[in-house]
Image (cartoon, rainbow, N blue to C red; front, side, top):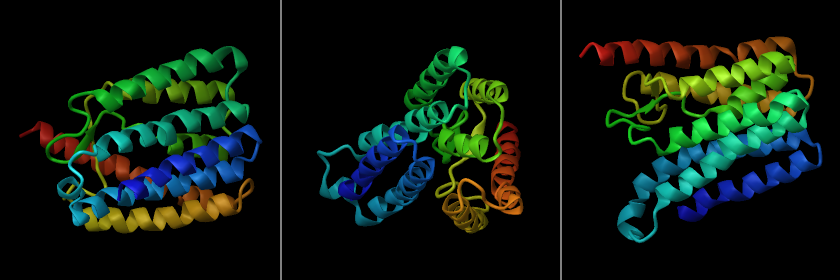
Length: 221
């Protein structure tokens, strides 16, 4: 199972290589594949009782290292390489994102006992995909990145799709459908149909609304 998790590192390298060579489509495809690995490795590891079989190996640490590369560092590298930020703003904006996300990974309450992510959970691969997909201007890209960076420190609970029990089946079903839409978008990159791009926003909106509603209920307890 740790080898399965480690494939995310290989996919991260493939994505980095694609970014260096200006192949945005291959970079996005590699990051998408790495996301699938990340979404499934925890469930497989728990089913295989990896902690009992390999107690000397910290799978969580492997997961965090690969996740930081896949969900934070490489998406920002892709956005910068694609001209998504003005040169003068690129370094300070990206530094803010990298440092805020680093805090998000190491914060003691990053994952709550009732299975929520606390603060914006560094979904930069998704943010960057949509910024590139909708060809957002560099000025607005910078503002959006800074806004999400600030949300890392706002202790709102975000749904952990595979573990938050409320509406989990619906969330996973919609998540799979969303993944299929994203796969189609990446396959048709750089010019997927507009309707497909807009339809793919349904799940992020659902996820955000569900997270805010459940967080409000948690805060009232």
